[in-house]
Length: 112
Length: 114
Image (cartoon, rainbow over the protein chains, first blue to last red):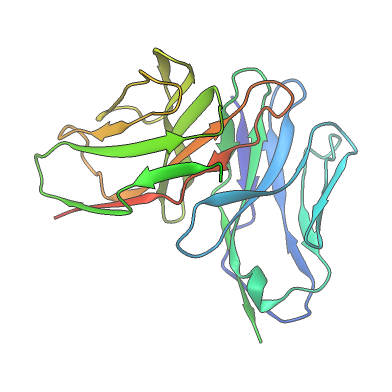
């Protein structure tokens, strides 16, 4: 079945540091890949997505590239801010039954 | 504004009681989902529905029940058979078609069993 494995946290950074959160997946066929973000006390919201190999999703300074050869979708941001403190989830959709498989989530804390 | 509304935000229950969590959406989405979130475990799918009057079990359906009588509504009942119900519950929806997989989430309901 489908599965997503993402880097364990928690991750603590200083403002303006570089952030990388690793995500790898197992799936049959050609899934779509997503990063969701959850701010404290809220539900999840879509951060970015990529629907085919070599696509790059980007939003709010975050980027992730769909790498089929390494089955990865790592999230990166060049200079984090305190407001980026949240839990980040990598997710996969097989595009057939509209279900998403989520990773365990990575808690990121950015300190001023 | 369009969105998903979950209620209540916080709920306390005694052991042996059933409770129902409400989820309403005005996005005209066909598919709706219930996820459970526990610390360090990510989101696990409880039930999902792709169309009115039809729903399927997810990965952890035991001890839960749902109904989908209207497109806008997908309530979740946590029954007394659920052995560890204390958790954060998230409802989500999506349209089918080109945006497949892009879920819109409610703000969640936190259930605590006393």
